[in-house]
Length: 318
Ligand code: NAD
Ligand code: UDP
Image 1 (cartoon, rainbow, N blue to C red):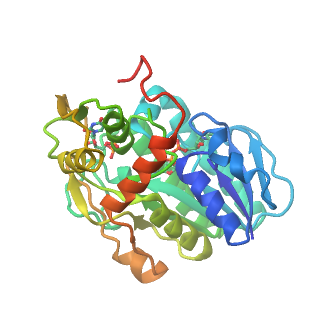
Image 2 (image 1 turned 180 degrees about the vertical axis):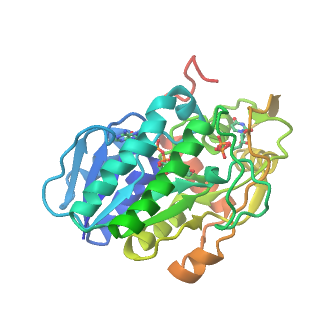
Image 3 (image 1 turned 60 degrees about the vertical axis):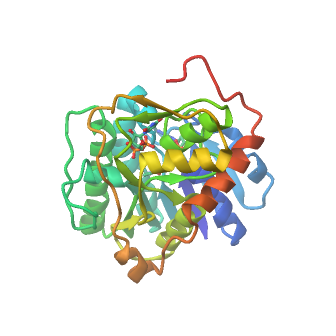
């Protein structure tokens, strides 16, 4: 197969490119390097079957040659990134999704949209299965991301219904692992960086809000299974083991032995209180379930982060 991975130099995208190449697929990575990094794919550049095109998927771009599948991961993804780039985030979900759907349609290729648990907003139903329609503030600070992904889902289903596109949706829950940017503002990367630097871990609110953290290797297995499947989804992909953010902080402190302790800061506006995926559908249809427990995934992430040469504390750190 030749797979186009839009957002392929990002955190998830680079792991997906690697997994596809290692099973023998060719990969065409499309990325504007807004939050992606050349270092994430540097080791792939010499691999047979890999190419990278620097482009913005919301504008005009060209992919030469045949395409068997398109995976759309190109979007600002951390709250820090989408707060700083609200219009680009809306464009990635709207124009970016339409451009990539068109590309897939021209080649009669499989299309997979990397949607998000954020389509459920601050959920009123717990845990969340795919039939829940969500509880999103359409004008709040997170809405540029949540609504862009909801629109992207609607567009994907419209192409499926009206153009017979072989298109499907996965809703990704919080995923972590090597290649997260130390300063992307997400909770795992932030705690890991702070702990490695011996700083206090910044807990927003009282830390009682919950998330379910999935290791990147598990997530990439789910994404490849969806690329191979003809199913429309949507499928929740995430680890159903729910943790409070405080529990996560304490585990990071334990694993690193950091003396930094905790520092409490105000909870951001519209921060979801609870989040846990029901993954029965992905298990039944894709044969997928996560395997890497949080402590093991954190150990691997910590080992990778500790090796990184980049300075972990910029002056503008929030
Ligand atoms: P990331 O920021 O590391 O990757 C996004 C990639 O897309 C980057 O390489 C960036 O440069 C690229 N990009 C952004 N806009 C682009 C554009 N207009 N044209 C071309 N390239 C563009 O983030 P990630 O965590 O790897 O997320 C990948 C995808 O998965 C995103 O669509 C995100 O919404 C989704 N997702 C991720 C998580 C998670 O926990 N990591 C959770 C839910 C959904
Ligand atoms: N969070 C925190 N400290 C941080 C960063 C995040 O307590 O330094 C909290 C944040 O308020 C949220 C949870 O951790 O409740 C997950 O945040 P993240 O930005 O990683 O993902 P999302 O909110 O999109 O699930």
